[in-house]
Length: 93
Image (cartoon, rainbow, N blue to C red; front, side, top):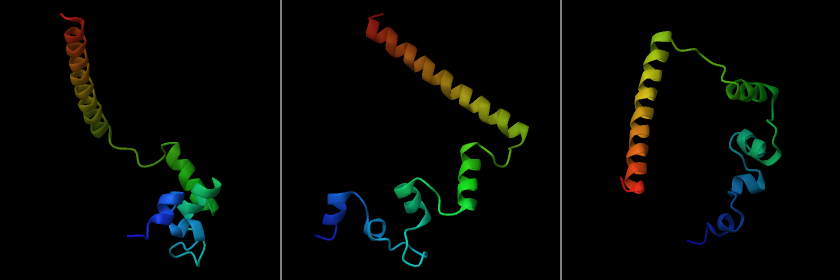
């Protein structure tokens, strides 16, 4: 299988190297353009990316948030108990 030798040499798939992006008329796709240049190709994509980074989006119901926080707290308590057990074991206690 010698097809992947160029990928292994560069770490970049062919559609990013040569600009054969899907659905873009021969140019790189929007994600490839962002990876290559650090900028989104359109203002709409840039705004959507920025909104996503800021956490904007649908706000879940308070009851859903409370349940998620309770679940997260239980997981953290379990992890803390495991950490304390490991520490006492390592200290020889």
